Image 1 (cartoon, rainbow, N blue to C red):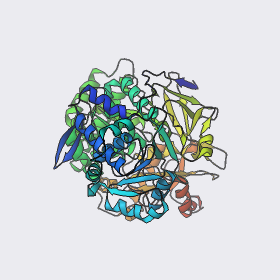
Image 2: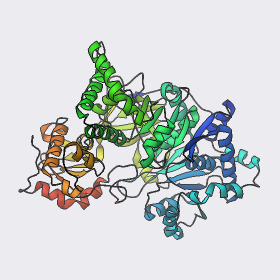
Image 3: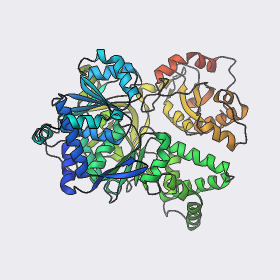
Image 4: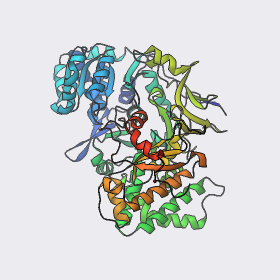
Length: 606
């Protein structure tokens, strides 16, 4: 199959917009809980009526600050309740909210503020305000900067006290589905970020159809989800709108260090995360079991979970004996793992990169079915996702209603539908290059099976061509290596080289647990990168990863770097994708050591 299309299940009136998401909830149940906010150590409810009143009050403040319909309002903050409040307040004022990652550099902030002509910026902290202040003179449209930690919400509420309700009602009705709702700047693994113009249709229509299409997750009574991914990213933003559309109670967790505590207190029924989160939960559980002398039990339970999940897809299902083992493992291991995620979650949605079949089967086996999906900023996050009733682990699922996918002759995935953005802000050339006869060119490579399930096989621009002319998709190897507890990042190299190599960085969070689990003394990352046992473990991990590819595509040699790739040092984007071109440039000398005749870091089995 080279093309698949899913028809719309629900069509919205052209005159509607994202403000109707709140007004519809208000009509259905004004006293229903829309969100819970953590204050003084407890989760306190916010009803639909209360949220709407707060949105209107803040929208009035934006009007009082001179924000006109169509103006851009910047939001630079971690994921917190005020982010969602400001988002809907900007829409209620007729404005266009523009997210800015709170980790952005001054140069990135300057570009977004100026390119989007942001008029008012609301930032979280004094540190964020200082970053904006560095470039304020280069963003002439930005008249004012408000700080959430300094009561920006209260200041806006007070400023708008005299703005009539009728003005907000008027502005709420101005936008149509085809008007711009937000400009989201891509993380930019190369070059300057491009601002994707996403419309009210993109968000409102896609979320409404997703709720109808996947009711077991998003439409279930008592639904709750905790956002901890950055709301500056399209994935979390989509779930924000979806939660309010569906009636899911929404929570926010701004600090990853308190995530386990927040999950335990909030108790979500479904979770959204990137694969790295699921990898760390697994690796952490394994290391904790080892520290408690229960490593054999954990590994038996993990193998049982995987076997049980695989058996679900086979004729006849799990055997009686496997079912018995699974029940025992649930009492000993799985229930505790589910408890770390709050104890109520039956489903999780994973995006932003491949999860891997092993982890997919493991989590389904312990009682948390991960629905892997695929999408981009330009497709308003998901174009497709696995459903509880239609799941193929290892794939990213079937197209959502109103979405279509095509596989081009060269293997590139092309998208079409109500979820595809209208173009890049102030960049007609990039917009024209992004489309091929009405189809959006994703830059990703994939295949469609005979049922329409999509599988991602690589990134078009990242294909490595060895000196022998072999085409290699690095993502297959990189994703498998990153699943190891010792590995933080892996960058496969080998363009115009005689064989495939890799740069590996150690995970400073995973290293102590691994060392303890293997009876080794504590050591720094720099000490560990030359430790024989660590290198032997990495050799084994590379050997396992190589089983997924042919011999010509396998990693022959690797080197361990003395630094990790992070957002702070500029090698990772805020959405945790590494900047391949920058890594290849800055670590050119280390790459040369891989191909030097004297290089001795070689995998044990080639």
